[in-house]
Image (tube, rainbow over all chains, first blue to last red; front, side, top):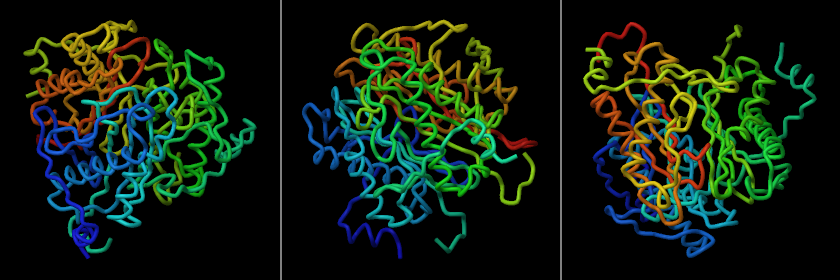
Length: 158
Length: 158
Length: 158
């Protein structure tokens, strides 16, 4: 079964991600793919803007985390050609823009982890760190950074 | 000599770390093990809560960093079965919850680096980044993220 | 052509980086080199101190990011012996010390990305994340963390 069947079942659209001027969506070394940080952008515009504990609640930030995770999948697709080449989501770091004393970053990043579990099942279970940060690019409430294991060429098991 | 002999000498207890709902303690790809972020929790409760430059001093935060490092060892043990399978501590990123103008994050993270040197000697010497951050999960003063090199199967050197 | 020819053309000096007490400039596993975080220090003194959106502008912070990137090259040289052993800059994470509502971290980190592109051309194009943070060690406006791919021993291509 292709992961795209599951993506269709979930009624998800994986965004197209374009290379930026200064850096690339991801770099693969051996079977590890290191991808660039992603925020909840849609077509170059920040779709969610806010700071947790100040002007955004956890439910909305979870949606932002989910969107950032979809953008990560877009990056992976841009590099690998197909999400079916993903063997495993290895590690996710989630940064949450947090006002003084907001400490529920893990609940926000669950929005990304749930998407990855939905799409990839057991292979979506990753090592994770959830962190707070004062500011993120262009007011994003969440940024994700991810490492992915790529299937060996010619591998037909999973 | 087993690393557990050294752990006994140091009178250290390595905590048991349970998998969480959404993510796993660590993911191994080849001989690299990427582990999840750890805070100074004890049995699911944050043992140290505070912000450097505001309500926690460096000495106490070093103890928190040491405890977070022990929790990292607990994660590694949960994944690998035994700490004796560690070849090398590769990289540690330490995030320190910092009030305005607190800039001594490296001194705090030394609490983790010292523990790793005590336990693993030369193999505990790692690449490191110490960072400040506004907030961390549940008020933790420190969070650690770690990459470890795992011994090759059947390796009998080192 | 050696990368040092290009470094001379660019009139750049790669700083010497000394090991610290508690950690090392970098650790190599297979062909991946994980290096320690670098700030815009010169000979152990912070050369740029400031916070974006408060007392440092983007142009000056870009210079700080460039200097931190040079220090990263110094670390790589300390570990590998020669920058000619670099196959590829894999991933750069750039942390920018940011006052409330400063959201242009990517513009600051371009100072590092531009240097890497200048020195390494296509091989300098990396995956990247730009993040804001409240504080950084000793008031640094920028900290960089980097992963590098090392040429295989005896490789004569590229």
